[in-house]
Length: 619
Image (cartoon, rainbow, N blue to C red; front, side, top):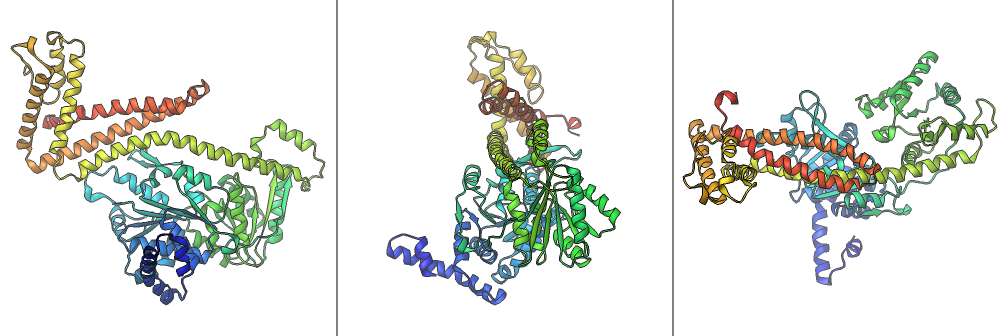
């Protein structure tokens, strides 16, 4: 183990020895817990994985056992130093499996664990976040984060800090879902705020991840998240290479359907489990109709189903039912599959990486695990070609009805489409993130403002500063027409401010010709401050403090929601700008900034109107 640490650290000899001694001390408790509770010795490869994770890297190709040890060790090293750790899984079933695997070790090391799941109340989730290590899905963490940005009392906060995060299956979560917005809904089911996974995960001080194999995604992790990668060689755990699985491609969807049904009839009654991978719920439901006619026993897991993946697999295997699963890759179902499973994939994925995922589901399930593809020229993957192109290609192929096409060019076409989709998706993620980064900078300003209002013990100075800003804005609006004070619109200024703190006929000056903007501002701020203190006396300190906090938070939330709608309209308009050869990103930055600046200027004015509103209006 010393040799490993010497490889990692290249300081002077004295410093190197110090690092080695400290590392050995840090690892000792974990090694003991692993030996006592799991009857395993800590492997050097696991230490290498843990080192990469704690440094915020993406680990590629970790062997399952090293992966378990490495992830648990990384979590321990961070949590034992007082950092809150979040472990992100694809779904609740995997999050539950992960905490069951690891909590024994963490509890033995005096670290607490918690699990987020759908049915929890707000109070229960707040308790979960008190744990040293929290397991859950990306959606659960993000939803709690967004809801925290709508609370009116700091005691209602669910997710207090975002320190260290480990994302499992990082390609599926951080890349495939990276620029997909996740929203939080209001009472009328209208989205009142949203954020992309990329923007959310950027809030963590340290973000790390692992992926199951090398799909050439290193540059995308670097571009989107600034994350370096650690790739294990094949000798360090890459799954065994297997022969190319059989592929049958038919001319039409109808021929493919008949071939699938024939195959399933032949497989019905076999003792080894069978999983049928389908593209979407609609296609799965169509196949289910045909299976019901044949009487073949099956169990289905559609995208719309909230079934537990582990329970689904267990029940299907026990009842000897074939499993119809829509998009099994995105569900991480391979961790629950039994030995020697046969997989029938009814389409190729848009991304070749996901085809590799599904192959490994079969090949890693045991010596007799197998997979085959039954495809057609009518599959979604081929939609990239025009109808005319496909028809011409079909006509060029001579094959009997219900016989698969023996033409290597077909698979080459599919490979070509997948490569194009990979490039297109990477480009699209970058394009979308450029827009999102504009909104993210604005979001950070708004959320920071909310944080001040929620956490500062006394927000009097903050409120007075906002009032001063509102007064400055009104003065500028009513005096910018001239350098001569007698030409200023003082009546308009008085009328504008009479909606908040200024009583009518209270803006009177004897010597207007010698009036300066500084004198005018000082006069108005004095009156505003007096009105503020008078209001505080009337309502009482505690009631007034609560009222002004809640009022400001509600104004910020309302304005931010309206601004997001305006930004979305602007984003849609950018598509037309792009067609007009205008740089859409640059235009979005400039015009989005103007929208944001105008929106933030309205917050102080609305605050003043709310602060001094008559009580009957408040009600």
